[in-house]
Length: 193
Image 1: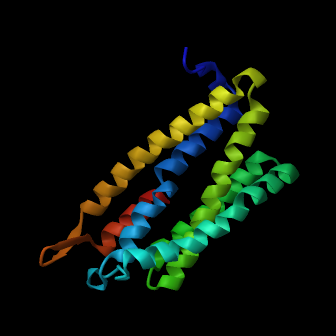
Image 2 (image 1 turned 90 degrees about the vertical axis):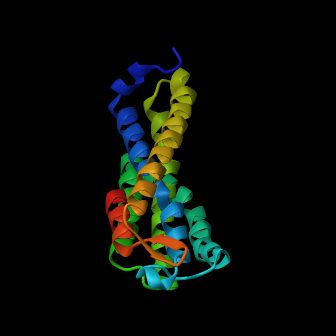
């Protein structure tokens, strides 16, 4: 068989796969939510009205800071185990999304939220293969790690569709332009949390 279903009898492997699926379903939608939010006009009640270039620059510090997340997750794994690093990443990511639920009023605030979300997400995904390598039999590590990548990709696609449907469920228009409302963004963020 292509997938050894018996591998999921191992609790560590099953939990890691579930956490990866949930993270891909939710927090990996960061680019979809924040790109639209940053570029939406201010008349939407939530948008910052910035250009695509500025939106990319707002995201840049989070990408740079995430370089440190993988090594930190490895260090935490060495000290307290993979589960501790996984929980730490989830808490950091959740904090960023919770803050985004309540306030996205400026570029600086959104930039800080993006740093938290990206940092925690990077921790989550960098520690998952380590947990798999520690939990799986040596002849199954590459298979299960590959399966983890498939799970992540599949659930990222499903999450994108769900978030897009939520954002499209409540919109506001001005002339020929239509954007999600503040309530649609808050609903999407609540689902992600």
